[in-house]
Image (cartoon, rainbow, N blue to C red):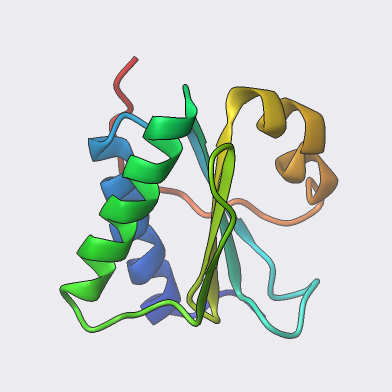
Length: 120
């Protein structure tokens, strides 16, 4: 079973918001075969703590415009998690992204193609 189209569209919107705030290394993982609670993990890297917060705020705002509110927001500083139930957004500093390696931890999950242009 693959992630639903509605969750993929939500993921795309969140990825675009991340890119607009200069988040990098944005990947979406289809978690449907691994988890019971979430369909997609969206993971992105920010260059510093202020950018982590700015990206999280942008995702919150953009998804809020279409009526989506997270069940919870966790973390501050180097890692913020936004839980939209079927979509979980992880925004991490470069240091924590390298340390926890979520994308490598879940490397057996298929990636979802995203249509974004990352700024470097």
